[in-house]
Length: 400
Image 1: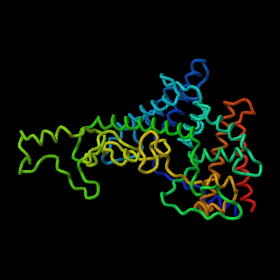
Image 2: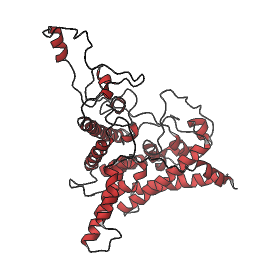
Image 3: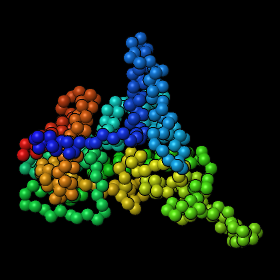
Image 4: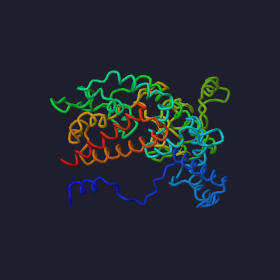
């Protein structure tokens, strides 16, 4: 058996039969695209492979029934509300109309469903013209002998924040520069995004975070507080809701008690145990949101289609979490074996990451071609060149 086949078998995903479906905005957009196509075909009296009623019956469980279980969360309600807020997300991003009809670059976003949230962010950068502006500015700085100035490398330094992203711990070992096949300057840390692109990503993050706060509050308002809301998570001891047999600690007409009650924060979505610190239903960051929600709703960081902010960062201008520069480093030196030395990624994992990046870039090139007929468009040319370089470098690694 060839080594190439052995590597492919080792890095291929194992088949599983566990439920791993997670409702996302892009999944919903694909369904809306399908429904619009069926509606158009029906209006033109074309023969449909399946009736609209049959398709609706097949798809409706995705948006009415949960595909996972929880002992405390009200998942039936959460799925319905999540669908409603996913529609709002798509409307805010401009890919559907107010009547939920796909518009603009909806097919581009739907085609890249495997790389959410990269599809939504790249859609923003393309429609705002920021990606074109960035590449045109960097084109003037091109120096043939300096690999870091080449446009495909510059594009990779942006895309690596969204595609094939790997978290970087706050304390990481900086690499020792070698004499040959140098990685990027800040390796293993990805260099910061250009200021205008960073501002747009922060704006996107703030919009998505606000939307999920509203989702959490809406779901939490559907259920009153129960005994399970007052249970300590580790010891499972019940937190007392009322005073014990000794009665209230203060008289009813106590001035101090009236003043204390007047300062009490109102909350519905935040866990009562977390609210003791004085927090209300205003969450400071995505991490604060997923860690301190009531158990009426189940949510984790993977459910939020954002680039996470750095620990301790909050607000619309929060810095992004440190990201591994493996993709940029590979574009510079093209040596898979050096990713272990600089980025702590072994050859097996590196092959899987690079091949996945190659496939995602191929999908992006195909999608951009559909919206950019002129072959001399700088974004299309750079994406095409980037895909070809990744493809050729991976093939060269196989040959060695």
